Image (tube, rainbow, N blue to C red; front, side, top):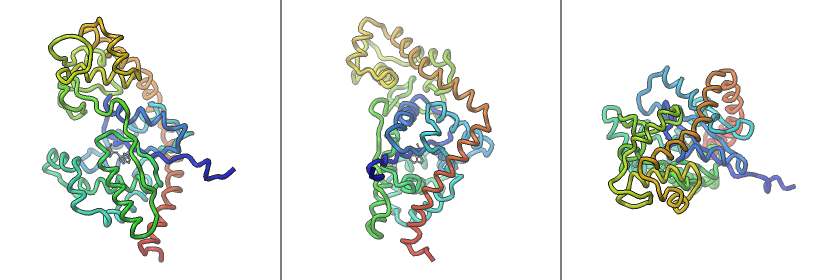
Length: 334
Ligand code: TRP
């Protein structure tokens, strides 16, 4: 059979080792990683190079990197099917990033909303890495000739920039890079805060009741949902003046796969309190096996090492091909 016909699309994504993952991150991106594995050739990485664009405690970064890996595995990513590795272990990312930074315009990087947000938030450390962060992300993607990038909506602009850079490079040197496309989650693209449903759910929110962490225990999850802010009035349906209920419906829908119509029907006789409790229970039931699996995996450091070592060997073999092509094209192939 024609080998080309059997080639599965390449999917690549990354997650920063930021301590913990919220329900929003899980539903917005992570949940897809597992389901993409069968139909695609998947590459997943823990983006620790990206993490140092904001100041990190070295011991915490190390711990969070391993925990990030364990969580990816606990969410159902299978190292037999997918390639999982730690970004800093493969030097090709930093190498390609330098080259591509010479093909990304200052104006383009200045327009990235994440850069604008982060430079406002970390005003005392607006470093070069924060600015060139999307170039490193473009390198992650383009090194593996990626077809699809599953990400949350907040990363869409970065994937578009990767396309712009790829296009420019291909235009100058002939086709070197595959043009990547985003895969955005159908539901749960935007999960809002439980205490203020006009804001995105975020782990940097000082109020821990505003978010659910994937590794929160059952009672904590249920309690957080019970204290979620709802709106005045009654009835479970989606409406512009019912941000709280709408957010809970989005969460319930993302977790169960049910659509709004089904949800409205299921909860037609429910008051807000009972609805909140029901959503809390369902989320807790969904996350419980992930936490149990995480606890097992994180205790097995030898297994984790085996996963990231093998994953990196495979990753480097693939990225070496692209990097060498790029080096030749630009005139480094001496
Ligand atoms: N920037 C992404 C985030 O913060 C993480 C990331 C790094 C990534 N490299 C990537 C995502 C490559 C997709 C593809 O969420």
